[in-house]
Image (cartoon, rainbow, N blue to C red; front, top):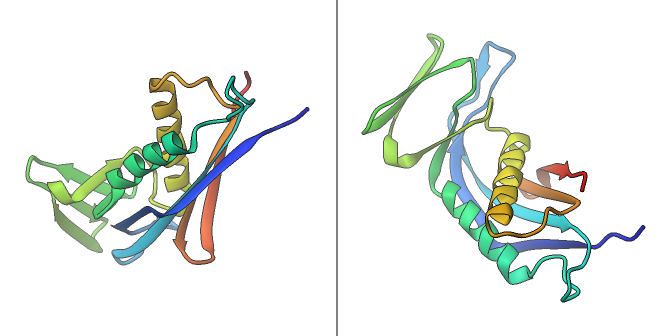
Length: 164
């Protein structure tokens, strides 16, 4: 069996965002930021044009996805250690009695994640990439993967494989 994979990573496929991670049920990092970098891979049979997926289209989609997160505070909506209250103007986040943050609503993106780790951000972006490809009518690939690099040399990769 033969596989073809396209891979895209560009200097502009980045997003600058703030986040924190809670762990071990009793600890929560300080709010801090990263200049995240994104890479995606798509594995699929070649189409009638001998392409897995047009690089231009894949770059366009990835730019859209990174722009959704750029210059935002990324918050995990499904974290049972956090109490999150959204209003029209603000988002209040509380970690037990230890920490409370209040952010302008327009500066936040709440994701359906349990934490804002690089691993789960890679999973989120893979799902969003899949949604965008499906919406545009592309056939389901054999696999999709997204790598999210927090800092040079430190990244997480999520891969979703499909049964066609």
